[in-house]
Length: 209
Length: 237
Image 1 (cartoon, chains in turn blue, yellow):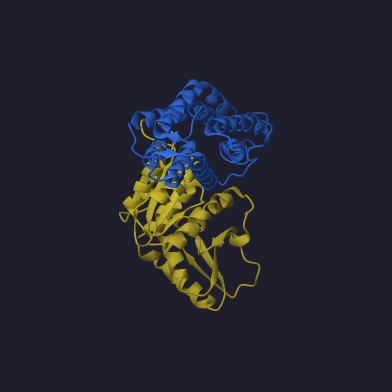
Image 2 (cartoon, chains in turn brown, orange):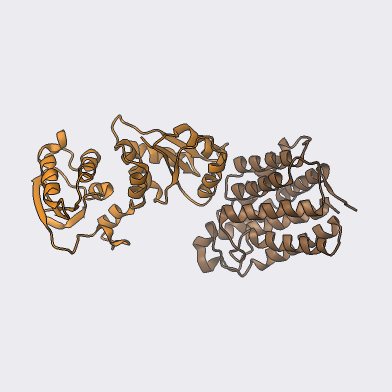
């Protein structure tokens, strides 16, 4: 039972996310080849490998996520670099120089991350982007916490909601990014960014279980 | 002089566009920094590198940034949060190739950030005119209002109306309160606003062409006379 998200747990989250994108590299790229430029799997794998390579033993949550964000910005190459980079950078600045996050603090940090992604990409829910997995995940996380659930339960609810959000991107017509050039033809495919975001929350649920 | 930053997924693409643009400037080159690729032969963009590039060419006159696709724009908006310089930075919405050519030429000619940004953003005008595509914006067609002054002069420069004479026309015109259309007197369908550097260059007017300046506005007569004299003088060449 996880009372707080400690630094080792946060590192475990990121490591699990790296493992998940590496394992799903071909799948993410396949999704991206349908509606994008066929590099999401390789980009995220390269970026997260660089993140884990540099992670060491961080002393504080803000330093950890600053390193994660800056590394992604410099190594991913595609749009997910600035988007995931902003997400993690905002988590770091919001969390501050602490060594663990309780549910409320983690929620605030994740919310700041989501706000950063929306600001960076100008995407709204329904545009067929990572926002479509992030938004329901955070809503479910907060709803669970407000019922008095612990972090393990809340992060499981977030992961399930992110997965549903990912599935719900399939019929949508893309309005952002490379996929938007396809117009109506982008419908009928899962969004690669929402798919990797679902992996991110599945990794969080496992790390906080 | 404004600085120019070129953000591309591909170093080869960025290098080639910059080489193309520099063909049109003399030795008076603006500072240009390239931020292209995401290292290790990765096709992509790197916000940290974009921030460095902006800082490399930072100038009190400002920096104009050109981006190719998608993540180039995201990385550049992010770079604005990382950069150390504090001068004005403008992100151009211009098409990549035409915009960079225009931006570099205008920067070399000493254009302000506003002027370079505006001209680069209308950089498709010349190509549209060449292809006979209707203008998306009405700004560049021959005016409907009656002309108030007209003057003609023959283009004597060996290489025609290239970048330098075109920029001289644009800057000379700036001294007057007048709207001037330049056309080929023998083929008036070839015409453009004389204040548009790219429009002028896009006409591809060669030596021996009879230029017609048609002006409206308070300074119409003085403007066409000045442009006529400039042309007859071979633009000082």
